[in-house]
Image (tube, rainbow, N blue to C red):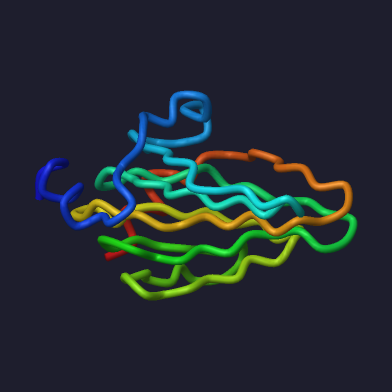
Length: 141
């Protein structure tokens, strides 16, 4: 599927190339900020080209915090450190507690978009870690 064909399926649109975070992704991702509430909940549509994935990372928080992913188009993966990767399809929801090492991204042959909902918390910070290796990623599918 081409980028243009996928964009027609993605009700939130691709947004702009996610260049500010390009060092933390393998492949091209796109970001479209959708909303931010007064109490700090932010909503963004993140789109991954086929085979694109982010590095392992942790959403740290002293209390509260974490992230929720709501899959909206295409197919991808989510994996927590020490666990098997899970396939993601439109309509799937992943609740990521604070302080859990994980990654997410597209499958090899599909574009993928999810809404990323940042959960407010106390003393929150993202820590970007190592890349998901091609060897590990290529075991999926």
